[in-house]
Image (cartoon, rainbow, N blue to C red; front, side):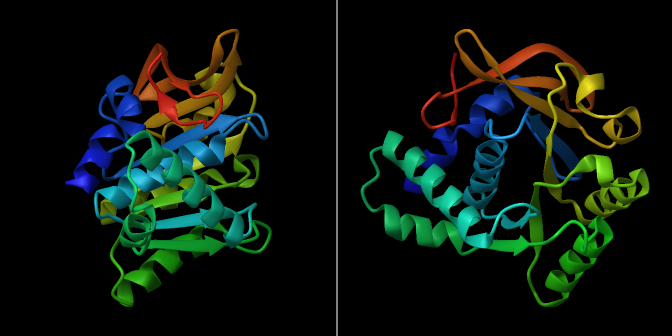
Length: 226
């Protein structure tokens, strides 16, 4: 029951309500912002939601050490539990995090096709991955054919994959290039406004979304109601 309460109150529910149900199996999503504004926190919220739904999650980081990624999950999950006044945090966290695999790569030496092969190896080893986070990748250095290969794999395996990219674009066309945008069903951008920080949804379920926003708590960076 505690787990279901966490699912129902997970910050990602605010995103789902704003973005046509959120990211679905067989789809890829992209979160962008300028450096240091909260991309990893948002991606970790998506990752925790996948874990709460008993999906095996692989978090791939290209710019952070594994210990830093673990700290992000600990901090975000603790904040979510705090809002629900859950006392047995450690036991609950252990039951959730056991289905998470963290991989740390250098983009100069490890390409997206190699990430796909790693997913295949995990599957052969008995781990059925169903959700993936790819954080810290510089999309300007990624060939479109690599994204296309990942997209084909995602559809074939029924995965859901969230990417992040550092970008200050204030619209869909400025956030991601047209040759890559077509592969992403969801595109959202983190930007500050006078009354706080918002996750601006530029694309939802494959369609351009104009003016949809999800507010982020200024202290915790959790998605919240306006």
